[in-house]
Image 1 (cartoon, rainbow, N blue to C red):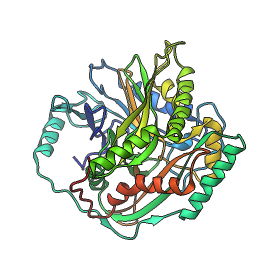
Image 2: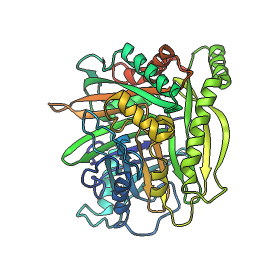
Image 3: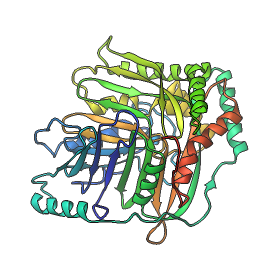
Length: 442
C-alpha cells in the first residue's frame, strides 16, 4: 500500500473509544487549495467544504462515507479574530487535505475489514475492479518493515533554563491578570534515514493511542507527513450531537502496579490539575455555546482518569446540539484551536504563547481528521505528533516534534519542565532506531 498517493491512516490503536480505523489512499485531489493566510480560519474551512461539493452521491451509514481528510495548522488562528500569529520555521502549509473515495475501513469491535472504492471517480483512474484487484494483491503480499536509522543526534532546540524562564514569564502574565492559563511548548528534531511509514509503525508500537494518524500531504509542490500518537479529541460530530474531550493534568505511568495506582490517585486528587481542567472545560462550553441550541451544552465525567501507554491524564466530555443549519465546518471553526493547547482566555493566551515562544507551531496543536459526505466529522488535536519533511537525498528526512504543558499560577517551572520530558520520551524513542517495548505498562 505504500506506493499509493496521499496515504492517510486514522488509527484507533488503543484507549477509548476504539471502534474504527480508516486507511485511505489515492485522493481525487490531494491539495486543499492555494496557501491560506494566517488569521483566516474561515477561508481554510471553506476550502475543505468546497472539496465535498463535487463528490455527490448517497452516503452509507458507516464511520466514513467518503469525503475530506484534512489537517489544519495551529497558526490558522481563531475564526473571525485578527491574531498576529507568527509562522513556523518550516513555513508549514496552513491547510492540507484531499477528497477520498477509496479506503479500507477496519471495524475493531467486529474484527472486520471493508474495502470501499469510488465506482466512477471521473479522474481517469482505473476501473473499480482493477483497483480492487490491486489492493487485494497488495494486502496479501508480504512486506518487511523498514529500518529507522538516525543520521545525527536528537537536538533540543531550546535550553531547559530558557523553557523554565518562559514558564516564569507566563506566571507573571497570570499574576498581572492578563491570562489564567497558557500552554507553552518547546521543540526537538532529528535527521533520519527512514520511510515515514516505518517511523509511524515504531510510534504506534511504542505509544498507542485512540486518535493516532499517519497523514501524507502535498501542497504547492511540497510534501511531508504527520505521524501522530494523539490521545485527544477536538471534535466528534455524528450529525446530531457535537462532542469535545479536553485533556489537562499529566502523571507518568509506572511498571509497578502499586506505584502506578498511586500516581493516578494523586492526579485525581490534585487541586491544581482539576482547576486547570475546569478552566478549559469552561472555555469549551463557551466555544460550543456560540453554535449550540440554547440549553443543550452539558459536561459529563468531570474529571475522568484516562490512562495511556506512558501517562495518565484527566479529561472531561463537553457536548452540545448544534443550531439548525450549521455543519461540521461551523463546529470545527467554533472550537479550533483546542482550548487545552492554547489556554484561557483563548485569544489572550494565544497572543501570550506567540510572544513567549517567538515562532509559529505549524501542525503541532492544530487538528487532523475526517469530514464525510454524511456530514459527520472526527478531528483530533495534534499533540504527541512527529512532523516529517524530506531531506536533501532520497530516503532521508527530518522529524520535528514539540512537547508542552499548561501553565497556571500554581505551576513550578522545574516540574513543568519534567512533565514535557515525560510526554516526549516515547516520541524520542520512536526515532532512535531501536524502539522495542518489552514488559511495559500498556
